[in-house]
Amino acid sequence: MTAEPQNLTDWQRPASAQLVDPEDDLPSSTYGGDFETTAIPRYNTDGGSKADQPNFPLLNEPEPLPYVSPATPNPYAAAPAGPAEIGPYDAEQQIRAAGRRGTLDLGLLVLRLGLGALLIVHGLQKAFGWWGGSGLGGFEGSLAELGYQHAGVLTYVGAGAQIGAGLLLVLGLFTPVAAAAALAYLINALLGSIAAQENVGFADFVVPTGHEHQVTLVLLAAALTLTGPGRYGFDAGRGWARRPFVGSFLALLIGIGIGVGMWVLLNGTNPLA
Image (cartoon, rainbow, N blue to C red; front, top):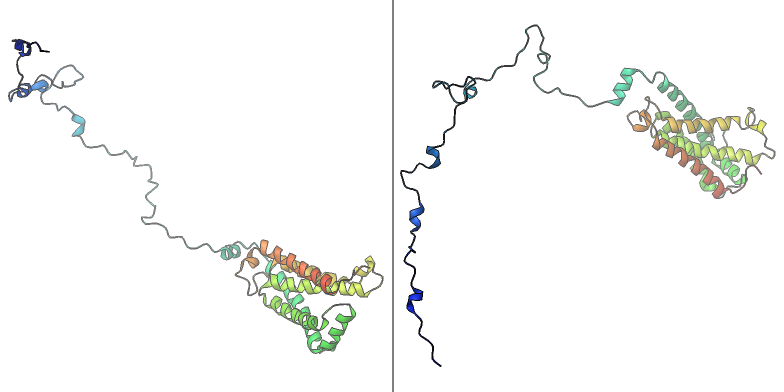
């Protein structure tokens, strides 16, 4: 098999084709381009052109000052140059300056001293037999007669709780805790007095010879638990003295719960039966 010889003229370029030098497309050094034919016209409102007028006259003029009327006083002239220093907020000082509490703290002091003194006196009567008291032996016997279990231990707990709570109330120290402890003891004393009496009626709670004074002491302890000690006491700087709320309410519930719980667990009898 033989191949036909190809014509070499087919591989020759046409006579009109020429090689192009890339440097021929570069502009010459004397060519100004479009910048020679493009000019930014000057803008004049009168339609004419002035040679001495700059293209942007507003750029060279100074910025005008704000106008201030001489008759109008400057509101910022008396303002201090530096930042004002603000001291810490003292709620107690604000309350004293406003005088909103009035004789409230004095009334709370009287209630604290009265209830605390009664608790201290009765506690000392039970502990040492002072002022015609029964002493520890007589107190233990009365607890056993009421049906309390572990009367020997409760003798010291009861006498110590009375004296300790009374002292704290007089000093105005940990007042919600002291008032709650006094409330728990007074609830047990009230329930014990009711249980010792056979026929209990409504008249027994409203006559001086019945349980009237014990109910009054229970209500007084509950009120001091909620109100706090006031300003005249060691708790004056604490929250439950300035604005008692959640903590005092919880202390009231705990005092009632401990009082009722001690009666139910250690005595177990129905005082109204």
